[in-house]
Image 1: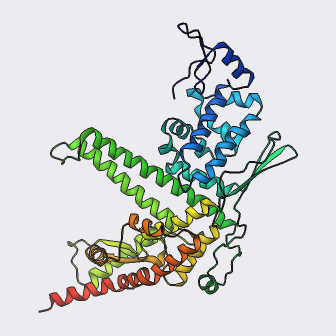
Image 2: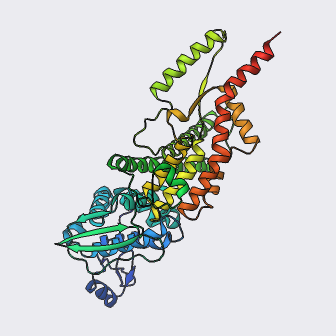
Image 3: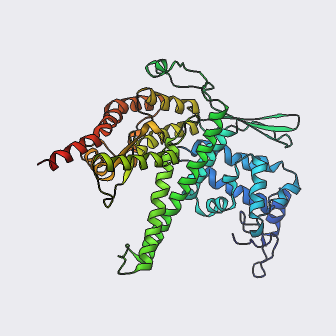
Length: 453
């Protein structure tokens, strides 16, 4: 971030005084009025710009928009009552960016991931694009999820802060007692499980209002959101890297044409693939009390034993390689898209983390556990595994994650989402899961028949 010229600097040509980036050059009279109004503090001006950009640039975003009405106002209002030393300590000089981020986070109650200096710089210079980047969205989600009450030693700031908008957006109130300001970010629906469909809840022994997220699950939820943020940020960075390469070199060359550029593209594409997979995994794994089995040490040992058994019983010589793939019976791209829709409702304040757990438990009860857990993993030899995916795609039963996201977006409420989810379980997930379970034995049988004299 460039160092801003000092406030009060006189332009020798015009005779005007520099009043900071927010106000530019002013006459002496205007400058004096701004000074008297306390508008010439460079730190406050920078914070104001962040708040303004966040508030005005991201209103249209369905996740961030309703919340940033509060965040922008909160940044500006709370810092107005901070002691002057704290304001001065938040100087946005280049070498003090991290200190600034931490001071703003402490002053406002925002997560450091939102006040991170690079995020601030992006928002100030990038407007709407930066304000809706995944890192900012997830930071907002974390604020709603983890900051039911944030205590800060601040002087009484005055009246309540209420976000613009109505309906199911979060109800935000600034309570002050004994010199402490507590930000109560509470959805209008105060029950734990907000879902109302008895056909979903009763078989699970649940009712609307039940609290099913315990301390361990709440802790896991926080870590899950952090993993989602990290993967989403890496996905965005990889996409930007690929686009930069395309802008510079055009399409990806062959290795023979330009090995260096070919490898640069390949590394960026590999990073994008890993980020996408990690994002889907983080979104799909929602249980605190289950161990991830996919690509774990126990799963690797099981595959090694299976390879030995296949060589023995199917008489496969050692010089013929055998690759065993772990197939997700409940496709992770599909579960990720559907669970992410519930995450969006939670971030908006119209659902609770308990509702996401209900979704996962409902699928498990029906025999289709989503995520990287053992009962969702089916070992398949690579060729039959590829053939299974081709079969499902050609039959229209396997869609891309983007297509499943479009399906999930049709749900306008959490209960709508559960209806869609339940229908997809019955029509798609469970039948395809049963197909996957018999696919390897069927492939072996066909191979034996073809080999028979």
